[in-house]
Image (cartoon, rainbow, N blue to C red; front, top):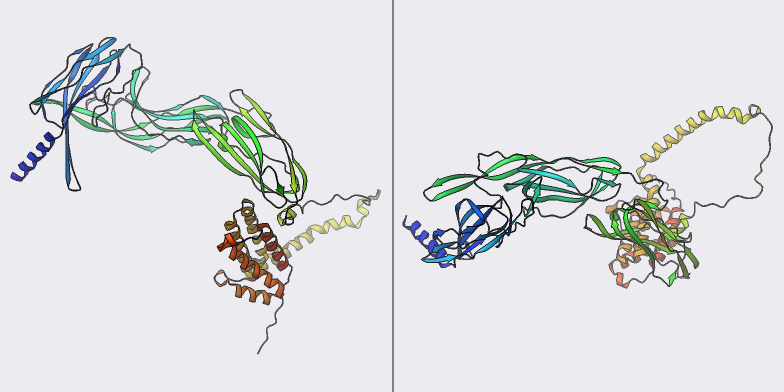
Length: 608
């Protein structure tokens, strides 16, 4: 007991030793006929003889309500202590004009502390008041709606006192036009816990989240009632179909704070009590209008307002077998993040790769704005004068309700002769185009009956012959698929060509490290599949031995090993590698073609 008394004396001494302060908290403005709180906060002191202020223009409803708090901490061998006493008065504004709050005072350690008088503006009924406190907020201070007299624990919390509302910025929009969805909490009570159990679903929409920090920091009037509000979720929605789209309701577990008030010898004391509630939000519906028909041929789904520019990099000095970029820049406001790359017609003599898109957007003013950069990488295969024809970019302006087409000027390109030769990718791309047959086609005019021709009767046999051929082909396929080694060998060239295509993309971007890594993957993988060597046993010695056994001549074996050595050296010392990457690609494609043209040498087993 002596030890406890000693510790208590030390704590009280430490609290008195800290500088005491006496401050007031109240709103700047109130509405005529509404209640408001005035809280006097004594920090780091034990007060007595509290004297309430003189008030004109408002009527005292309740108070003072006294609450106390103490805290102490021990960090790195040092202790700190703090305490606070709060005296809360609840007033009702009686008439429009000025409400004057006089000075309140309290005695601490034989010394009287006083607050400064201040004035509150009383607005007419129906106005919107700024509820921000006049002083800085003190932790634990009551909110504007923590009225113990009207929010007692025995009072039921109705759906008008606390609810979650889904609000849409527009009731009707076009497809792909932005609409802002806000999920907001309205409450007349303090909230101690808020847990979403089922979130609303946004079927039929693309969603862009807007970052928010939920906090009850704003007062709003809805249907004549004043609430503390907090934005729980906010996002920009882009409808993907026409018709009536509905956002489903959400479910939430909420804990509200009510008060159990009773009188004691120390005055009126309010004890906070938490009550758990289950809240369901409303549903929200938006009417989605279809985009008008007919749509321009150059329309790719852009809805909003946009500008388009195009440029070639480098603008001059283009050479064959050297990569260049044709860049589209689309800027503006709308569904810019979801715009598809426009079609650009390049000359047939260019080797063109899939476009690369980079979106730089931000959320603001209820829609996305920014720009999208679309890079088309191309490699001229022949020298000469070429033209990229002018293009069109169309978008739908929902404010004007019509399509807008922007003309993108064409580009004239002068390509000089560079080092190298047309790539395999370019040659293979153009292999499917055959010349049109001309001259005498051997057409004749016949008057015979088809039933007199033997070909007529042959058609009766065709279904039977086709069935037999199909069965034979199916049996052959089953037999070949059972031979795993043979199947790997047959697929080796196709797999290698896909990997070489990926390496060409690295070469177009000038990424030597990625290029040679992909080249090694292609060469090692091809040798493993072609020669049926397990990955765990892959080595240049094993590959050379298997190539010799396969029937590959010494010169081709040496070329294959030299290429692997060259790629390994370039991968681990790219700064020392000076070989042209396109030339290395062509060399690899040529070696693979030559290896594919060699038939496996038959081996004869010798019995001893």
